[in-house]
Length: 236
Length: 320
Image (cartoon, rainbow over all chains, first blue to last red; front, side):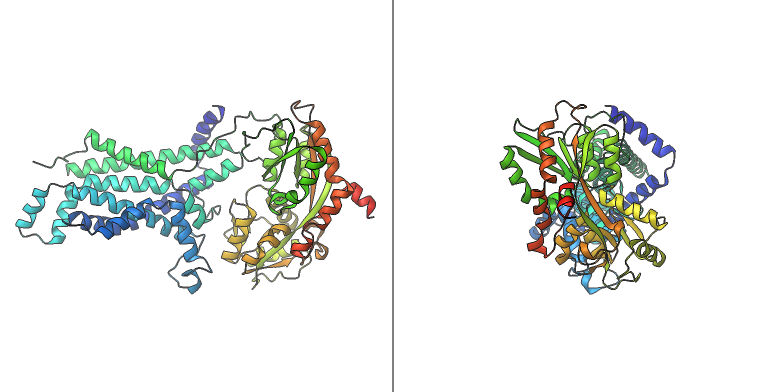
């Protein structure tokens, strides 16, 4: 209880005092999660819309999607690790666009791979939930498939926002993969979750708890913003 | 039927939050369970790892808290059966970082500690947590780095000179950054070299020796490692080589790189539950000439050189 209270007070102090280390960690966390979410959404929303609109969804695609959803992030991190490692399949080629291990870019790749199936599946479900009558109506009016997708996605925007909120929450709270491919370098690839692991390991429970509260607050604010956005878009 | 999403309804917001909680839960870190121990009156210079609270020693058992190096190299596994047979005591080994190992003793959760961080050991005894510190053995640290050696430190006899050149070249240095014995040593060496170890070239990763070596191998960086871990892992680290410290302890020209281990009995006056008799027996046994001979020979067959050099009083008397 004492630790918990100290952690809460510590969190307030850390945020108010504008500790540059902590803000750096928060910044890296946000940068990695939001960039990865953006990449995931860029591919995942169209993919989800495509799958959701199809009358017969290809089984292999669904199987692949659900498998990808089920892969533990740490295994995803391991796969990225062995691919881009200096002696890995991609890493050994020395290509300029392959990120090096233990960089923010490597973390973004692993996180984007995690976000992609999440966003795709949730978008697909949202699109599938749109009234079939509307689709027929839009098609009857002579809309192209692309226009149909746009209309349906607009109708399904609540679900898409849920996909993004969920994706963000999953990414920012992920530990295993970012630890493996990011390496937890102070001031470079250290994010909230890996910093919490480190501080706990060193017995600095107040600092670990403080960072934990920061993480919770961040997720809460993110949620609040997105639900607000959703409300605005629904009215507009 | 109209599609009703004019504004987010209660259930929708609930769904969003529920999804968030579910997903966050799936990905969340293992819960941090703080040890329910009150902060000790005197804190050692370095904070410790969480104290495992589940270790309980039975009537014929004792708890040895030690650093990972003595366990990971296989030294304890090779030595302990002899002690256990002679005394009819089972030794439970808790291998953690030096700070954490001392913390176990500090909280009365271990009976005897075997660690390598002289300053912290002395503080531990001075604060009344431990008694009767004895020299046991030493091994050494070496500086390893990329074979291409951008900072040109290969063959230097002084680690301080090597660190200065690395800093001047801005070559990547990988630090454990975890307040372990090795990390403490590394920070002392930077201080002695008069360099502030900070900047984009200095990577503090907060991880163990194995991960740190892997990181250095991957990123072409320099790092300080204990020789035992290096020897055990060298075959997997094809981009790295020893640059300062030579191929064996005998070749290590820099005294600053030596790494002495000490054994300390946890003070029974402070914690009556401590098995003082067993702790004393262990301390006497590990410093005895017979055990010291085994320490001196350990690793010879596997690595062609010993991993630790015996250094107890009894050994020094027998080998002046």
